[in-house]
Image (tube, rainbow, N blue to C red; front, side, top):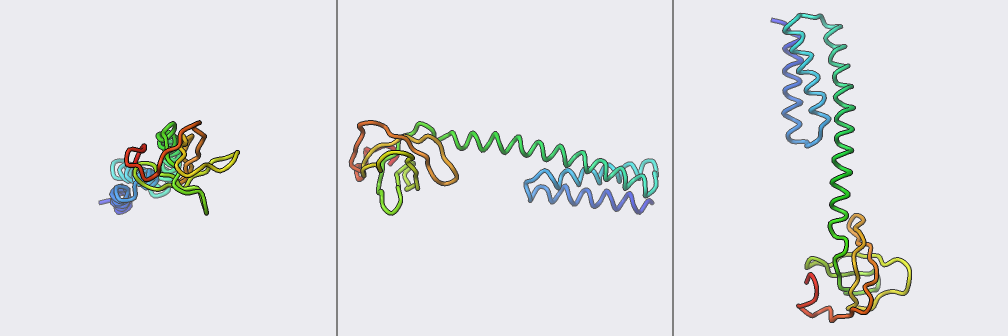
Length: 154
């Protein structure tokens, strides 16, 4: 029985199992590298130096791949989430001390860049969402009663 190969396979399996709880690709990259290096050690008895070098090389390659995949997935997901709200109408609830609007049945912090502050009840359009703030634009000529249940997204 090869102690190093068994140890690497068990450590790799533990890291892959921990990946399920963490939700990142990084533990999976390390886990797969250790699993493959441990499997190579068990199959071909390569020796500790070659086996650990293989684990290092595989971990480096898998980490680079995981990093690129994570960036690509998070950027696409973040962009979709940010743009989901674009073009929807909101109603101004209050202007002081900060602009608050009603959208999707709740109050949101908002920013209306540029001109004069909006009036309470004015309808504005969402340009995009930045974190938990809505970036708004004017929707000319639309003023409603903010207590009106028929107003948009109430």
